[in-house]
Image (cartoon, rainbow, N blue to C red; front, side):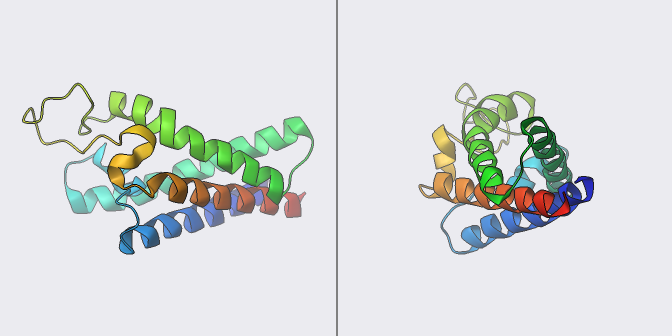
Length: 159
């Protein structure tokens, strides 16, 4: 099951990241999760992209191990249960994670309390990350459902 989580975490993060990147290129959203993560570490935009992708894949792997832990506790795994976990993961990401937790720890992200001219900041995500585009919530949730289905499916196959 552990190797299923490793494979699922990699494949799921690859698909999630590709879906979000493709949606960005199609002008459906402006969200760039690796860039958001990378700019927490550096203000250099090129370096932030590279670091962000590494960090995004590491976090994707950690979430896959978290999914594995929940599957073990429940005593069942599979792509459908993984998709449900992905839906929950996506909802958490577009609400509490990016609007409550990320602005608190991200040194370059603005918030509703930040003055416009105070310093160069990233735009705050806003409710359901809609500041990054009206279609961002559903695209982000769909990408997380795909992530969860892949993680759950690959863990199930490895069991």
